[in-house]
Image 1 (spheres, rainbow over the protein chains, first blue to last red):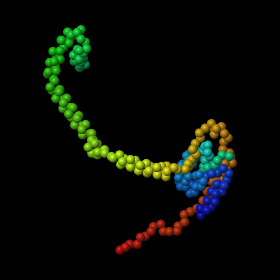
Image 2 (cartoon, rainbow over the protein chains, first blue to last red; image 1 turned 120 degrees about the vertical axis):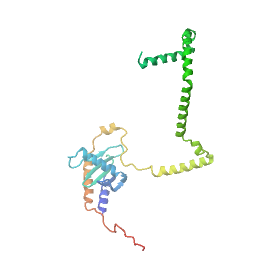
Image 3 (tube, rainbow over the protein chains, first blue to last red; image 1 turned 180 degrees about the horizontal axis):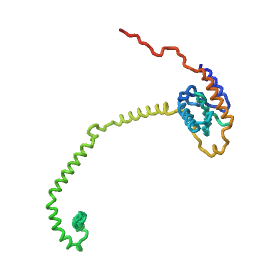
Image 4 (cartoon, helix red, strand yellow; image 1 turned 90 degrees about the horizontal axis):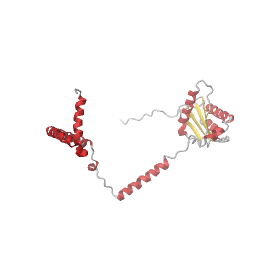
Length: 91
Length: 164
């Protein structure tokens, strides 16, 4: 049953510049993590999403959160009951 | 003259005059001579009582302090042999190195931040393609999890057979 999610995350990992991907539910439970993503920090990422929702409560669809750094960018997006965080090297 | 402060000032003045006697020398000799009998009489009259009071106060403070102080040296002697000390030190260091290597090393989860923020701020914003990619990835993950549920295979409550 989780094969579909795994294959989807593999597809994301195969994209150019992607070095890690993390998928978690709304409560911060890590469902799957690949590459440089650490499942221990799914809760932190979900709290980022929750705080972003508080900043823009009426915005629909929910915004994409991007944390920039020297090494890579972290793109976080929540959809339905799932939150996806992607480590992507800027091209 | 009727207020308390004036009388206090008087006694203070007498006390100061007697205390300053040696420093003032000959110029203040008449005053010192005039004050001395009074001071001596005052000391003789109130000396024994105040001394006993002071002694009792000091002894009480001493007792209270002795109650509060914990004598560590009497409970545990600090006598560790040098060889034992070295052995313990080696043991602690080995345990600490094992802990350092196992638990303190964790892979980075979030980006480590930006050393030169000017370059990031001056650079172009995140490309729209990346944002669209994140949106598509989230939608795909949500769709792939739409049929996700826990399969019930075993009994959640296991009944233990009673031995009786």
